[in-house]
Image 1 (cartoon, protein in one colour):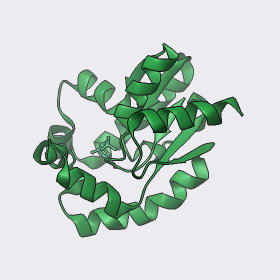
Image 2: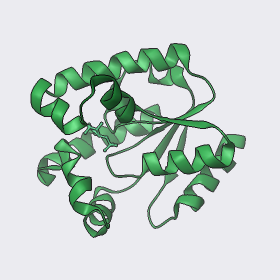
Image 3: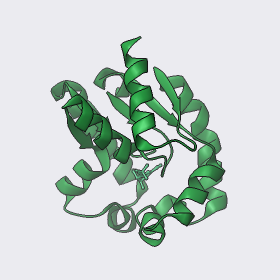
Image 4: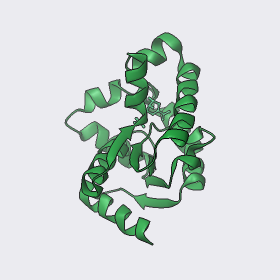
Length: 166
Ligand code: S3P
């Protein structure tokens, strides 16, 4: 199962909640990339550039498609653009408006860190443009769409579990 959606939609937290209640393992694409590079995402963007990071996402995607079953995989917001993502498993799109995500990040306890770890959220006008381009791609790739606005982690996880049964 693969969770997709825009930065800050809560993919990692929802994946952890789901993994716990389904007794499965959670893997996170950004964490896997950071671990294997020995560098944080902002540092990779800074020193190697975005296209290097996108290549790592592609490589990771084919690795996951070939080697991983029975896991809940949370992904970075741009991972959706990897070609073989659908071969990894069922795709679940955590959907939200841009405004809801930004407001939640701004009001959150770790607001500063949440923005600092996301190089593409530095400029909100640019981020909104990416959001508008991505919306259609997320929707197209998704097998299941769950709106996350004003819902708790538990509610979102429950909704996903009900929808994957159908
Ligand atoms: C990105 C999203 C980030 C991270 C990188 C690029 C994107 O992950 O992969 O900063 O292109 O949307 P989150 O969605 O977990 O913030």
